[in-house]
Image (cartoon, rainbow, N blue to C red; front, side):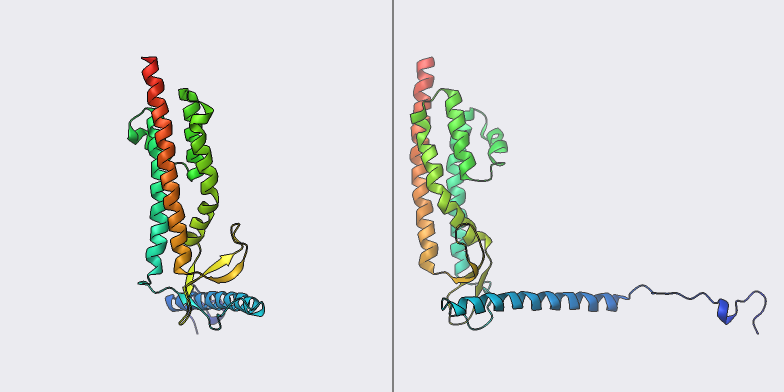
Amino acid sequence: MPTPDEPSDDETPKVENPPPTNKLLMDMASLAIRIHEEERQAAFNASRTAMDTRGSSPWLLAPGPLPEDHPFYALVGRVASEWAHLEHIIDLTIWKLLDVDDRLGACLTAQYPGVGQRCEAVCSLGTVRGLTDEQVKPFRQLKQAAFPTADWRARWIHDPWFVQEGAKPAQFRAMPRVDRQFGLKEISEEDMKKTIGIIKGLQDEARLAEKIVLDALATLLEKQV
């Protein structure tokens, strides 16, 4: 019999819904990961089935990510690097037109999201500096020329890559603007190298446009002396 100071069995506080233990949390996390993987695999299988029905895909087994040492990663890196060099050429032109320390100019150009915005900046700055519409025209043309390649550059860099034994690497497309497909699409090394070649051609076009603009600016400044 309990003493007056001790609670009876009926009065003993009971803890409802005790906090989960670490093991329970780990089990819950493992379950969530397994469910996520199963859903992801189901999405792949559905897209694969749809593509196989159209007779356009040889993928019969679930793919896996590219191995860490796969040579396609080097091609993806080349695409990213060559595009960065293209943007840098235009940045150099902008800094010259701003007539400021390059570090100050970089504070602005670092905020531009792509080639198109950089080309528009050159055209606006050139107009303010006194250049003619014809003299800044090469940068308007560069913007138009780079537009479709910018989309492909984004696909090579932002789409996830997969591979299965005996097949070429493939990307998972999710209805992008440049290639409105859903599911896996095989990509050849020639496809990647073609994009790299186009970007290098755009670099040459950008260098020529830069020379036209800066030569015109130098001539204009000489006349103002």
